[in-house]
Image 1: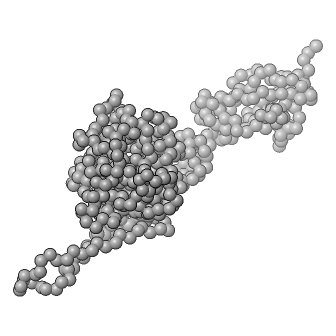
Image 2: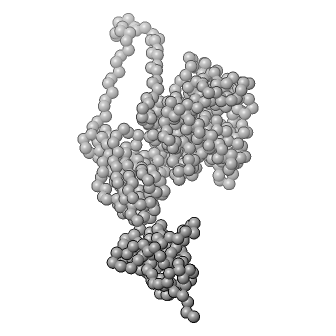
Image 3: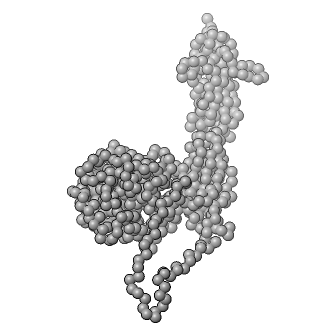
Length: 554
């Protein structure tokens, strides 16, 4: 794709000639390591089908920022390479973003040391693709406050890439868009996505996940990035453009000369690329204003008698506001019922929302993000904690099936229009414990022991619910007294805890996959007699088992 899409003039460059000199100077300063691939394509030959080809670039050859580094680098050649504490805004990298690049380098160094991936290469690509996650607008986990989406790749000025993810990542179920701080197209993310922050998810909008994925992508095909030709081929496989390669190389050299950490959300924020989104900044901050361009003087005076001689430029026509039928007013519950499920089961009800316009009617092709919040291990089908989908022609969209985990209690699912400052719709979901309506011993052997000895036979029980096996059901075992209101017995048979101490109540017992439970060993104290062991399950099932302590017959 032509690299001029979304192009902006480099700060500090006063003429095209100065910009050209800057490129030449930066390229020349790189020495042997900066030799650019001369084949124009620069594609690695695949090794066992593992290396990406340049024709299937990670970004789909989507547009990128062509700003160049300042002419004055953080450290002059030959000086100390220690990172400065302070420096220009351009050399600063937001803390979480910088940490993600370095963490990715360390991870790949341990798994693929031969690649020799430098974190500065990730920083250069991150700068060109998203302006370091739009100036570090990320939360504490490294996830952007709203998705960073490139233009729609519909063939109109950009590449034509049909939808490959049903809008799950980019909110577009017709065409693909590059997603996240490293701008992966969904089909590439499906192959190369990584979990860089160990949260159990692979999220292209998370800088830790995206940086690690980019590192693996660049290292594919047994590349050694300390070799100039391999590095060039790797960058070209990311975006198939020699101008892209030169731009990344310029930032790579710039960051190798030194950089410094700046707080998240305070980095330089680039404007949105043509057709892309401009995510809301971190609450409490405001984006850096872009200075207005200086007007060019008229090159020719008006012809005599040829119209007005007023030097003021003509007033552009006012921008027409969007029609109410096309203006998103918000999202609302589209009839979702009660969300309840037993631990480990799928919720029968699925969350459904409706996007409405200013007239209250349905609005299609609205990106909606569903997010699971709260202390729960519930996940959407596929193991995701957040999914993004687009509304259909009726304005509605249904979230994937919600799968309950083992954590019981309530949690919240929120649905919000992606990247919009509109209220979210909140749903309360409840996970109940697995239940059993019956529990009984699996045999009828008499349970006896001599005073001060242990019971030779173990106690095994099986739980069922409506006649079916009840797995994972919580069971409480208590040695009880006789009487109408039994209490925990302070004498007779007992269990031992992990420290070997005497206990007569056990909790946190659970039936296995076949619904059975084998109790720990039972011991007898020195008091002979007949005693009772009561087992109680979630759901109210109860069984009472008799234990006898007596001296053996002579």
